Length: 415
Image (cartoon, rainbow, N blue to C red; front, side, top):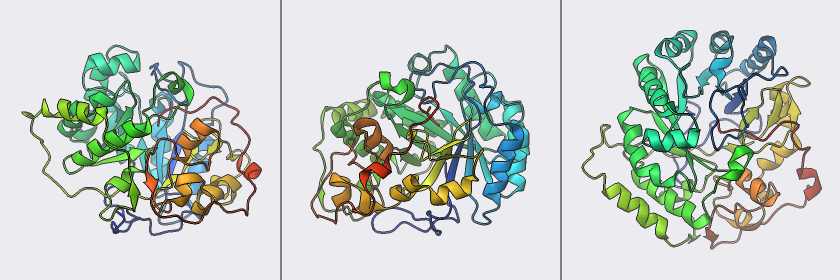
């Protein structure tokens, strides 16, 4: 959820990515802060297995304010903080938290659930408190498809209304979409809906099998390639990025790395056929230059804090590296051995370790861990075969030290 023209970044290079102007080993760029797991929805893919009531062990107002102060103490450029859940609108202190973070110089975004709580009045209050962006999830382009995925009738209408209200009160809008076998054929119609809603960014989350998402079907490597090619073809009409599919960077690079990707499969044709059926629908936004993706990832510029204070590389990589109740987040981020390993591309194994784009892509560490149990393994969701060998994993850290303690809570929900 990063601004498209952030002063924190430099322009796209020949490898097709934007780079941060500061060292991600010293400070995070994006902090995903799960305030609660309370939520009125029952989404099929929920990474946190959210439930109706709040956890009595969730961080207090004072504890959250302390984490925000810790992040603000970094000075400029301060991180972007996404207040997520569950549904952060279920926190009675949400406006206070937003206002405090904004006063400290943090860029604050909020990721509410698509429920009747996300009213225009509530969103206007967040804007007045200092929030700059909201992100809302759409996993189908119709009530039938979206509500079936979210498991609550009416969710589609509530979400669309909230998207329009967010834009009307002056908030930037990010639309999130889970990409799996259950949703992938919705992408053509969703691209037009995202455009019609005036979203500033469309973030496509490629399913990582954690939490309730284990019951869904992630795409194969070939299908992921087909979906990413299709998204790349839309990127001049709809500003978009991918989450847990960093190999999108290879497909939009001005100078692609040497090697060979999977040949187009049946999904490529199915997506194109559905898109052609929408040919009469025109784009509302003007054609623009493709937005270069940002070279950040789990633990590498991105960090996640759970409602109980556990710190992980991301919500989709639920390996706990510390807790903000015992140690400042800034210290955990800078010193945790696992996070340091994730920031060192020489430790990547297999195809990811050999790929010429390992410094700017490196594969999804969450996909690798969820599917293989090895956080530094090659990413099984990417089918690219590098043509140029690069030095393999470093022997400086034995593999056993790369497996931190398993999380005490349940596996994570989509942010």
